[in-house]
Length: 200
Image (cartoon, rainbow, N blue to C red; front, side, top):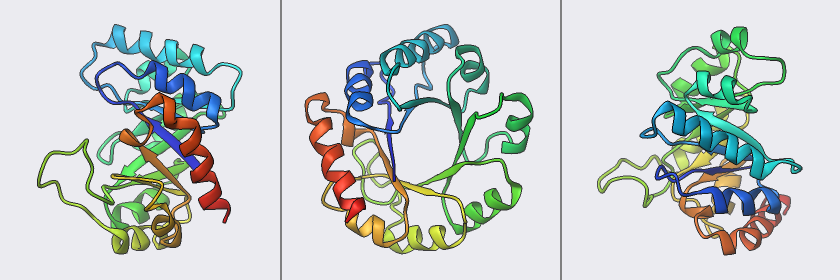
């Protein structure tokens, strides 16, 4: 099971990152597209410092240059970003590469192309981080995506402790979220409940 905290985009997630890492979250994706490069690099380094000594790994959303400069654990690529095999040519051994996909066709293509360690699919459920009217894929499409790839699929979009059983039954190997992990004080309890759901 993969648990992934995605940062909120406002540069204010360090407390949540610290608590998530201490609670057993596997990945932190620094997704701060509005930050200038220097500020983003500083945030990634701060996130790495706050997760030091835990099993949590810090990834940078789509900025391979920042990930390499900060010596982060990996990069998470947009669906339309650089090819994963190209990233592999530039990155050190053990570098984690993920990619966002929005349907079974993209999942199958990413699998054929190679180079990815996992895929993130969404938006599965309505999400507070998306604008009103944003298209929701739903569980049936998540199921099709999981069937279209041999890679672990991490579901994103409106994830809650209550709807995770549906996600598991659809074949997802993990979940990612922003709002799910926003309240630092509730992260440990949520991680315990989520792990229990997947273990069950």
